[in-house]
Image 1 (tube, helix red, strand yellow):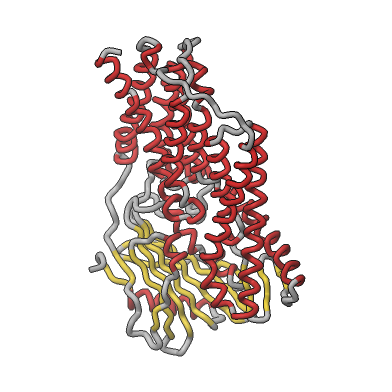
Image 2 (cartoon, helix red, strand yellow):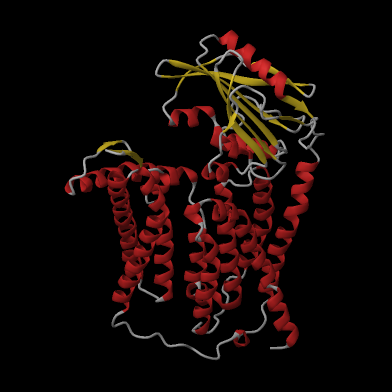
Length: 512
């Protein structure tokens, strides 16, 4: 093949690499911050390794029948990438967009392979290309539904096993009450982590050893069973340890037990794969079959050019769409920690919460009022575009307080708060725990003059997300203030206490 033709073919791979880079760049949040998807970082290298193996025995390139579908696919990619990236700018961690970008990357790869080697190459390389989809985070609705079904099931099976080994225990939902305390089977312990990583490994082994479709299906089913069984054993072991040595011992072994369960899953999958491969004939490796076997195809260049144009267009289009609607930032303000209040003591923000919030700055503390009432407060800041505003949902008062047994009673009329010359409306809610009232001030403020948050603005339904795109509203930065006042039954007295606290500790200007 002439040098120029060879160079052109290599350059046509750049848009394809850009497609996978866009997908990986979007999914990196889940791969980094969600322990269930840490394995995502190795999926693309493993996919490339599988592709290199399939390259060795690739078939002779076939004729490209109906080249019109290659052009149509290129046009679709050129239009789809700017559209998806436009939505992503306002919703940077929306998992639906991760799925869309991964599917577009897979489509681009299959179109490129079809232009080079026809349908024979598409069929031959389909496994390594589709394997990339195992790195895609599940939709949040599906993930939560699976975890919600696994948690009580895991706890119920573990309870029976504990009774078999003469350890007294009582189950309530996904909680196991032991003589030494209560052990919770949370989402992280439900088995969904092991399930997701085990399914990825099952897909890799099936493609690595070129198992039949029926064998791959059985391998996936067995991987599911292995993940659930090993996680139940993990729960039983931790519960037994907690019953004998206390909850602290179970906490110390929590992560190690998870890694042992995952390692056991992988060993079981390897053993089952070896059983399937026993007696299978070795696959011949073809040699000397290269791109020289067919002439240069204009369809390859045309498709790559259209895809590359879409990738290049998405950045200036996104900047123009949101930049023309952005307004001046509001004057900065911040809430300082009330160090001089009686009984002030900081409350550390646990690592798991900090990982979910990913705030730029924040503090959490408890203190007493001048009349001796107990207060607790949080203050968090998020820089512009740093993380999506839905991260604030981690600290929605209804969800957090309900999870620890504090019941919502009612929501009062909003409380007007003046910050740096601008008026905001803070939510005023009342909760109770065993008859003890808790009055709560909850304020979310954005750093932009336009589109200040309204009730329901952070529900993040499909309608709200798409409305943000149509309005050209991307994350300008947020501040969150949450203050709880215990043992105050009077709404009026609580509002006076909140107003006095804000007046004492709010400061104009940025933090120093």
